[in-house]
Image (cartoon, rainbow, N blue to C red; front, top):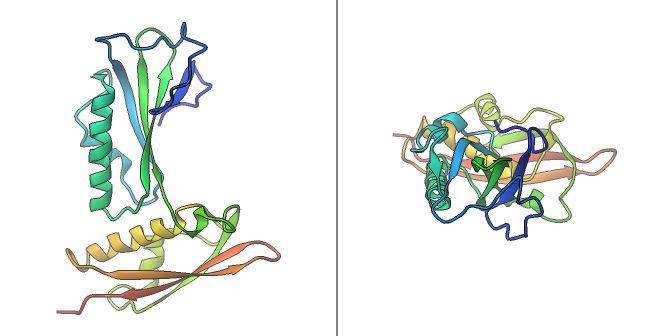
Length: 210
């Protein structure tokens, strides 16, 4: 995991950050022919990914020179791997966490961005998970699906919770129906008082049994 940004002279920049640098002495811009040098990769934004396994498939390693073109190519590899693992995302953002000094050492950080109901008004803000029900499931039990969703009572429900829950269930069903489509639809039941509680209702359509 990368260090905190204010620890040891680190600075975070987005790939589209075009602001002028006030600290060019500590973080000199790349000159023609220069490259960043990789400290490491980081990937976050889903409960249902093996970060180490995804990063291990990338060709660069700590200490290697790395260009923005290589980071872009790696981002596309990450997106394809996430799609193959049923991770639903609207975008995968890229940022650089640069260490001060002339050697241009960076962490490359990817964050999975979700779009679901909790990304939109009036559902933004703090919600607690109340519980969930499942219907239509035969090949997997409710307990198995709860484990796949990986939400605990009173846990904070964040943006992307719905799409990430579907990811967990689809990954679980892959082991039962490899290569087949399982249709999963979710409904929300929301309680506003005394605290904001979100309950999920899942309707599952499994493929025909052999």
